[in-house]
Length: 211
Image (tube, rainbow, N blue to C red; front, side, top):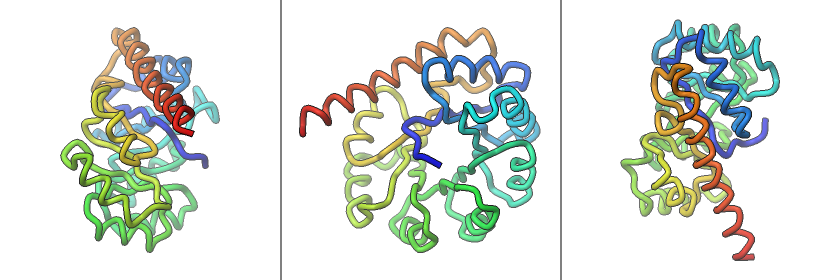
């Protein structure tokens, strides 16, 4: 599975609204979708709906995964990858034995080292908004081949800073898709998606100029 640039976090969106929300994201070019299991039944049903509606057109994952039973249920529903809120070696190993990618949450150098030892290629820095760019820069230094996904409080103001210190991607929640979004939010979601994609385009142009 290829690496994402932006993952859209869907949290507490009702199954009757979730297809409309994701259709807008897909139209704007965002195909990585993380459905949070913080409200498990809503999340699992939303995954089922999205899998049936969009199939392989989206990269559909389950987030806020804290227990192996959730992994099994999400796989049945159609999840293709998992994102955990924190580091749990046994849970990570359980997911990897299922043969699907996992982006585990990490915060400390020790947790990052454990992720590397487990063969993880991309870790979720969470909550990234509390780390600061100096912390991220120093944390990333010893792990040049590891990809870092910024998660937790990412917005249009701080995303460029996180990208500039080495984060390769970001998972974005309410600043992209409001928690509990309905079809009344579609115009806002479209506007948010375009704004974040412009930031990625600006980063790409800056890289080209620096070559």
